[in-house]
Length: 113
Image (tube, rainbow, N blue to C red; front, top):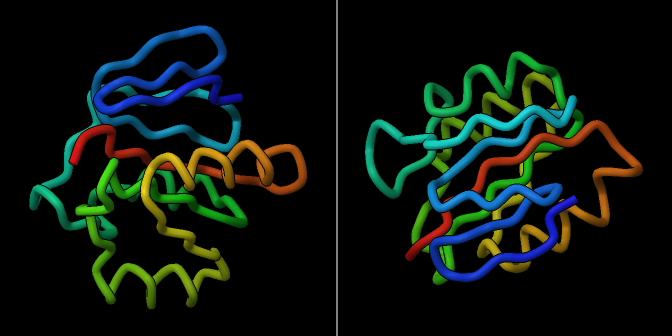
């Protein structure tokens, strides 16, 4: 459960993080997550998350939504039967909290811009 979010900070299950992160369907967290190309989200950036076989991946695209999923990522996930939901981080966190008890969900969150 994600308890709170503000620019540059997120609290997950009582733990505060101040860097971008990935939450796997089993609940384990990869902190200090970096993308190869700044504000672009590609398959290589989340390959371990994809390999964990979630039904849904929620991408928190930042406070202002500046991180954008590449079209190739969306196509690759569709081929694997994984739904991608990309939204500004505050909205994405609400979706994550709503869906994580109903589906096998993974997520990646950009915490700034």
